[in-house]
Image (cartoon, rainbow, N blue to C red):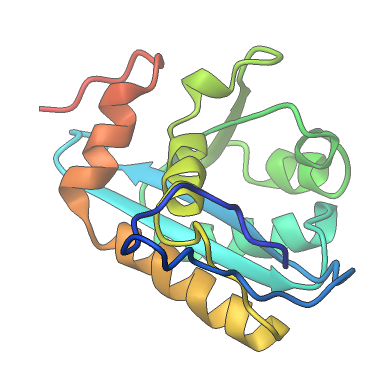
Amino acid sequence: MAPLVRRSWAPRGCTPVLAQRGRNWRKVSVIGALVISPRRRRVRAYFGFLPDANYDGESILGFLRQLRRAVRAPIELLWDRLLAHRGEPIASWQARHRGRVRMHLFPPYAPELNPVELIWGHVKNNDLANFAPHELPELLDHTEVAILKIGDDKPLLRSFIAHSALFLRLH
């Protein structure tokens, strides 16, 4: 729960102080999907949150099931090469949904192609910068508000797609 410290403004002689608890390694893991309609007219973002845990194959599968229920069109899923994205139980789930879900991996070490990485960078450098929570629920609430605010900002979501080096052009 250590803050990402960024330069900020304060009146002369009033140096900002970030009070935090020492040696506290609690965290909130976030998973996200940027969904573009087939005709590229609509953009939406979906997110999942796990307090004090890492996303593994089972939790990623839970997110994919929710995404599959929310998105009625066939899904072309692009994601990084995290082992949990390629292993079980994801592979067997994809085999059962082959006609409705196709998965593609980004090249290795290519975060600049992934527009969702730009969402994480934006949230960390803006809404979560210099934020020093004292308890995990405070971190979870603040993270959810920051992420969900971006999910409602269609022009911002389109800008992440346009800024990535991925060849996806929106009208």
